[in-house]
Length: 292
Length: 273
Image 1 (cartoon, rainbow over the protein chains, first blue to last red):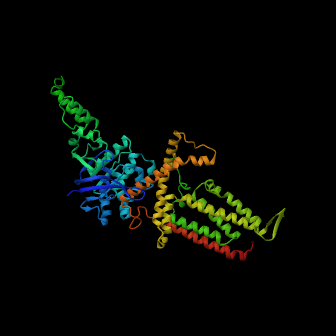
Image 2 (cartoon, chains in turn brown, purple):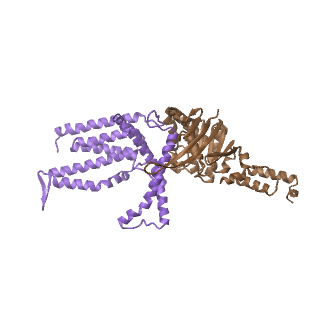
Image 3 (spheres, rainbow over the protein chains, first blue to last red):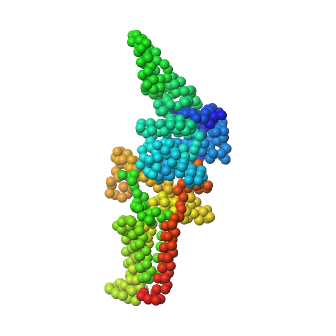
């Protein structure tokens, strides 16, 4: 039994004109079936408008399926009595760090979730302290969120979700508004949570280099899953990714082009170290002869 | 620069008044204001002045800073004084040309102006020593009884604290939009007030659009973090009365008793006015 499971999920955005008549229907998620195992680091890739954010909002019971079912830890998101349990199980981090920080002091913001859940005061403080330490923001606990950098704000948002002690964290393009350094900070924090705390992570992104460390990658297009697999499997399909307007990490692309030019490299090279290793292996086997 | 904007007129420093529970401060300033309206005689005003000076001293806020709050009411003060001075009927004190100043007028003008000054200074001390955050918390609790009349006290307090959180962000954004419009030759420097007002439309429209988008995002983020109104909510930093709060209440009970003594007993024993 997966922690998040969708069965034939379909979601339509209905556009209405001013009189309330239906102008058109856009199917954002189309007959999608997915099963995410507890403890996994799952990445969902897709270009703008592929339905990946819409899908993510279903995991947190913010949107409800037009057709089909979403089960979070075995609970149906359509069940109104379970909405709050679901939101505690699957915490969500959004794109814009400014628009999800409620408190005027970092520690107050992290405490917001537990406050809403009715956690006793003493325990709130423990949770806030722990979650801030987990994302490495404990030193900033008394600071005003307005004075933090984008990456720091986003880590505070993650801490705010962690304080609710979820089994699963969904990150909806958490790095889209950050600079490269902030992006690295956030991805490092998330990876650590997944490895140390065994929290299921669902990362929604269109940055390919962020999904390299994932256990499983889903590539979405037009509301469906185009293909999926381990990062290595996914990145070996360079042409397909490109046809979906997704770019592969530079190293992978380099390896791919080299292979196309006739150099026998393996498919789906993910990191620079890997490429170096493969190339030096070739060199030992007589790389010059092959090129000639 | 804009990120350091201070809201209200909170003055950050260390003092016993800063550490008091916001509820204590709100109620104490209410009692102080009340005391100014109960009686009108010299003894009461001397006592009120003494209390005010004591509070100013305890607050550790520089006197200059406190006086700054008075600027806003100077006009009001002058109007009140002038009207009272010339329009009160009674025994003539001096008269020149068409104007007469009566003894009662003089007395009224004096007391009214003092009352206004004390009112403003008294409430300033509260706002100067309480951060907006604490003030919101305190107001939520003090007005909590209004829930019986279906007044959404918690929601109002939450709105206030969110507004406080977003003011610096929106100020930043205004700045950005203004620069963007300046780059497209918008003119914000016009002396003509109508032109100037008109020139702000291209700033206000995008600002409002973005504010609404932010509001939508924030609402979603709050719901995702299980926000469901004040029901069943616990506090990370609950307000708790400490020894110093009880002491403050005692001081104010004594003060009010003193006001009654000054207002009723003293004038009978030592009549001046």
